[in-house]
Length: 272
Picture 1 (cartoon, rainbow, N blue to C red):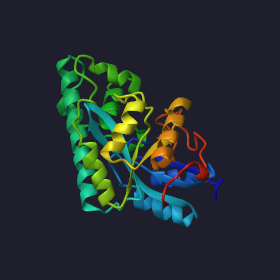
Picture 2 (cartoon, rainbow, N blue to C red):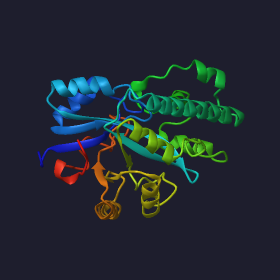
Picture 3 (cartoon, helix red, strand yellow):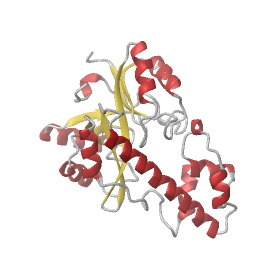
């Protein structure tokens, strides 16, 4: 089991990934990954289906979710592993987060309409998003309207208004972590080296531990070697869980591939 390949950060079409539950499990098998988790943004829609498919394939599956939180004016992500996906408080929290983001998407379209671009809130509300394209409704709407082509071109559209994600007030880390724990889960700070995080890794890691996170996603494509080593040392010193994953979104982010970075069971510390 020590050398079994692990990927604990994967997204499906239930959030901003392109693969269905069936496609994810098929790709997991082809990648020879034995232990994995689905961690969709503010959604557990595909967890039960993936769990059944994983059991049929003889794989070890950990129910997961990735929840948005706001800390010190910035947007951060907290992973929840081993959660009860039917926990009422958890479902209420992620549903509220989804509504918050949908409202902010509408506000962002209104901003672009006022800016004079060829969009309208009425048109946007009638737009039917195809979840298997990955991304989110506002992004895909603007791509189809030929306003932008990808995420890199999406965010600069809001110069003078602000990043829609950072303008959104999600629940505090303490609240998110408490809900994850009540759902029987383990709360982990996701990708501390992410460039969109407002605070640097050496500040946000100890800060989130004080907020109550139980571990750190030490292995991630956006964690460079310095970030990874800092997080590993911090976790070992403070007896915290150690996780990692590809943050694969199917074909939405081509550079995020299943099994990269390469992680085996002996690299992580997590109650399975």
